[in-house]
Amino acid sequence: MAKKTVFKPRKQHFPGIDKIAYEGTDSDRALAFRHYDPAEVIDGKTMKEHMRFSIAYWHAFRGTGSDPFGPGTIQRSWETGKDPVSVAKVRMDAAFEFFQKIESPFWCFHDRDIAPEGASLAESNRILDQIVAHAKQLQKATGVRLLWGTANLFSNPRYMSGAATNPDAHVFAYAAAQVKKALEVTQELGGENYVFWGGREGYETLLNTHLKREQDHLARFLHLAVAHAKAIGFKGQFLIEPKPKEPTKHQYDFDVASGIAFLRTYGLEKHFKFNIETNHATLAGHTFQHEIEVAAAAGMLGSIDANAGDLLLGWDTDLFNTDVRELTLAMLSILRAGGLGSGGFNFDAKLRRQSIDPADLFHAHIGGMDAYALAFKIARRILADGTFESFVADRYRSFDSGFGRDIERGKTSFAALEKLVLSRLGEPSPRSGQQEYLENLLTRYLHG
Ligand code: XLS
Ligand code: NI
Ligand code: NI
Image 1 (cartoon, rainbow, N blue to C red):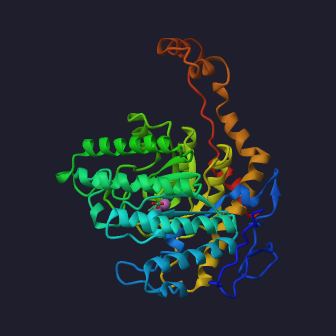
Image 2 (tube, rainbow, N blue to C red; image 1 turned 180 degrees about the vertical axis):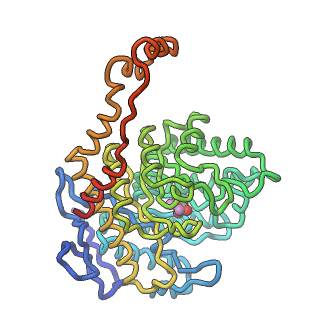
Image 3 (tube, protein in one colour; image 1 turned 180 degrees about the horizontal axis):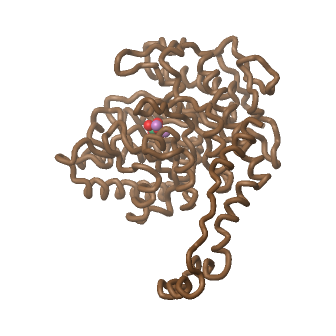
């Protein structure tokens, strides 16, 4: 009989920090959860199952604290070795220790986060296979699962003018080969989704860009990905992650609405949902909740990249989100839409440059997880009370019967409506939208 593997790390990478415990709001310990109790059962599911939190490998384990003005600052004991492949393995041990200690059921990665790139594609793939084998063991030993995988098609200089939208077909081919492999390793690790974020799929100037051809190429690329997923039997959900700009001046997957139009134009809408990132929403001039509602309205809400922007700065600052009001509004829309399905809340968020200690990584994620868990609970209370729901239902009541229902069902005409107004209805009577009353009601749920 095969023995059950027990996870015995060779070494503690976060010595002195135990598994983070739920201690409730009375606790004054900083390294404890106050709202996220992974074991709490709500409606037959644990909070761990409800929240489906995920750690973003690129920020949590590849973030260095560097910025355009200076190099990395963040200190990690395992980053010292000489051989990049061995370092990659030890780093991954540290990562899985962290996933367990922070009680995160999932993680996410780009191919190049977990394994260094080799001198050729063949070598890169060989290295990736070694690291994926290591990740598979760690997943098995810890029970931590893969929420999604993706390919980094934006860091290497070969992708400076885009990947699928590069003017050079050679680069398109290289990117296709890279995504083929990334899909295969995501499948190997049981990934529940696969993400396409179009890092450099956009342009800097239309003086050198054929916009229509680039969009056609992007659609072709996605069709090829769909075909390959089918060929290998990958069952995970494909997700598009919109972002309006950065690093390119204009990115094609600008926001959810333009993403839906793009997918429908090219007959891809059945194969994709959206991975919505808070900071990308605000960069597009929307609220987080707006993007969620637009995706949900199209039945295309997939997953969340949980972070926050700094509205005083014009880029993707990837802060940890502790704004419970914003998150409660988002949760309301998510719960009304029936949840995230195979998606989850992935902390695509990074430490500030001055937060250099390993403990800072814990504080950051504890804050984000607690804020989300609290928002989840408040949103559930709001929905159970139904006050906002009945307010909205009542506001649209005139469409539930009579000529309003005829309008919704397509059983009327301009001529018929004109006749109705002229003969019977006359002038409508305005009714208050009561926004301030509703805002105050929300504040009561948030703060009593
Ligand atoms: C960058 C994106 C990126 C994706 C994954 O802004 O958020 O991190 O989530 O490629
Ligand atoms: Ni993201
Ligand atoms: Ni982002």
